[in-house]
Structures are given as C-alpha cells and as structure tokens.
Length: 150
Length: 150
DNA sequence: TGCCAGATAGGAGTAGATCCTATATACTGG
DNA sequence: CCAGTATATAGGATCTACTCCTATCTGGCA
Image (tube, rainbow over all chains, first blue to last red; front, side):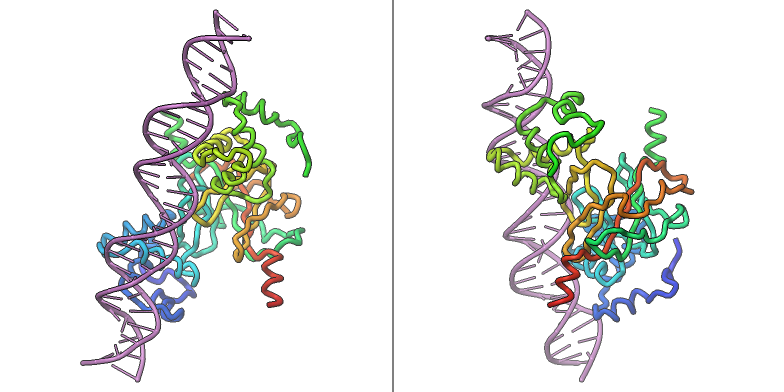
C-alpha cells in the first residue's frame, strides 16, 4: 500500500488535527492510520478491534468519539448502509459505492469507472442539493462465483 | 391520500402474501397498511409504535420479522441511512432519496424531478450491477429557512 | 518543568434488534 | 363445518452497538 502523502493538495494528518484544535495523541494517530488504510468500510466496533492490536486498553468510546470528530472535520466520512451499524470510510476522494445484496459488502467505485452524470438538475423546490452520489446495487464477483458452482 | 389500488399491474396485498406462502394475519395486514401509507422512512421501532395503536399487544419482534419478510418478497425496501437504525420504505415505485445533512430527514425524489442518467455503463469487473439509485445530499427547505432568520 | 484544558479508560446505561419458547391461530383435508 | 398441524405471535431474555459519566491522565503551553 502507498505510504505517506495520500493527499495531494491536502493537509498532513498531524497538521489537520492541529488546525482543528485537536490534540495530537498516539491514539488519534493510530485511529487515523487505520481509517485511512482501510479498503472496506468498518464500523466503530470493528475499528476498535484493529486499533486494539496496538493499544490493547483503548476504549470503544474513544474510537467512536474520535471517528465522529474526524467525520466532522472531514478526515473520514459516514457511509450509507442498510443495517444497524454505522460505517466509516477513510477514502475522501470523490467516489461511489457498490452494495452486494448477497454478502453485504460495500465496494468503492471510482467516478472514472462509470459514466458519471453531472450534478443532476433538480426540479424540486423542497431542498438545495450540495452533493450527490450513486449507489450501485448488485452481486459481487465472489458471490456470483459461489452461486455458479455449488 | 389515494386509496386502494396503489399498484397498477401489481398484486393486491392479500394475494401478494398468499403467493409467497405467508399466512394472512390481521397483524400482517396492519403492518402492510402502515408501511404502504408512510411518507417518511420509519424504523421497525417507529412502525411498531404506529401498529400498536391498533394492536396494543403486538411485539416488536413480530413487526421487525414481518418487515424483513416483506422486504425479501418485495413489498417494501430497506432505506440507506447514516445512523444505526434500519429504516424501511413502502414506496416501491422507482425513486431516489434526498438526505438533509441538518435534520437528517430523508425525502423521496421522483425520477422525473431530475435528469436521470441511464443505468451507468460500468467499466468494473468486480461486480454485476442490478440496479442503482442516486443519493442526493444537502439542506432541506425547512432547515434553510430556520438558518436564514434566527 | 509545572499547570490545566482537553483526552482517555472503564464501567454503567440505553436502544434497537434478535433469539427462544409456550401459546394461539390460519389454513388444510376430511 | 370441524379437527389437526404447521406456522405465527407475545413476551421475555439476550445480544450488540453505541453513548453517557467520572476519575485519572497527558499534550501543549508558559
């Protein structure tokens, strides 16, 4: 996996924390590292498990609270989901999601991978659209293969 | 609100249940009625509250289990969300959703309201797309008004 | 180096969802 | 129309994710 300067034009993690008046603690840095390296879309509980490998005593509350702060200042995002856990995404480049209806995995879809329409022109007075994403739904390769030869 | 034959070309609720080998119980019919009349996107717990007006002793488990069955046979859908409750949608006509980032409400968006792109042509080998939806995000009218004059 | 606002650990509390089982009831065939 | 049976329900127990609370700790400052 690529190290370090993930953000072209973006602030470094440490600077990012500082500029939002968040103290730089080893716990926060580790959480940051974990959320940025993920390819899946883990819940707070799952990330807690991962961070515990380095900080065995870290509390779930710390992880959850930290992730929420990160999401608010734009270090990570909440991911839309269909179950009752809140999921996070460390991938901040614009992208869409594919949901597998079988295994429930969520895969990232780069905008280049599909012919993306421009911000849809709305004929709706009920709201002001700031952003939009496309939510693809179907069956992932793994599940298709599993279903084809039983 | 329009009564009765909601589905042109669709099966009647009763027949729908029967054709999926689900016994027709008064509880199920009431849950069905409630989920089909909703304009919001209620959770199982919220729907349980509503159904209790008619069946004070109905258990949450029954409502949750029934909704899951309904979703599986295509009477209702799961709604994508950012929090840790599972929400349902009784509107089965194709549509998209607008999420208000302030009040967290989810509003339905008819496809005609936006210039909908066709099913995006995917250059991605990792999955087979069956369906897609657009997830709009922004600020709803109510919240805009509230923020404008304080 | 010492201070203190802010951060953490750990436990308690909460809410939604799921599991379990005895009882009730919708459908079936007679 | 009725009895038998497979299925559904109610209610409680359990589970899980998350949030709240508070004593202790510590990063960043002077």
